[in-house]
Image (cartoon, rainbow, N blue to C red; front, top):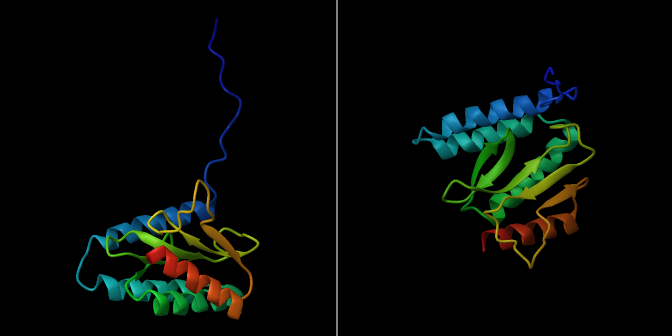
Length: 149
């Protein structure tokens, strides 16, 4: 009896996901070079922000200014092509994902496992960001302070 072939096919990664993975591979190669790594990371973040749509760019600029002012010990770098901020071990603590990256409805501020946000058995690690204002800024400052504590 002949073997039956599976009829379901995986659609695989989207073009945006493949591009993000290529960006991450280039970032990892660049991280292997020491020297002016931090300056290069800052420039990469600024370049990534510059490429965003105007609405996302405005949010990203505010997140960048807030994170760098609140946690100057975090190093700016890109992570999957997104602005991110890493601890002394090079692990991403906080990142910004613009809505245009994967055609999402909103931008997000997210935290990786290096962030100290643990609270019981479940806690939020990503926050939708649609508009910047004093309340949002205060919340982001508090979250970043907690993340680096």
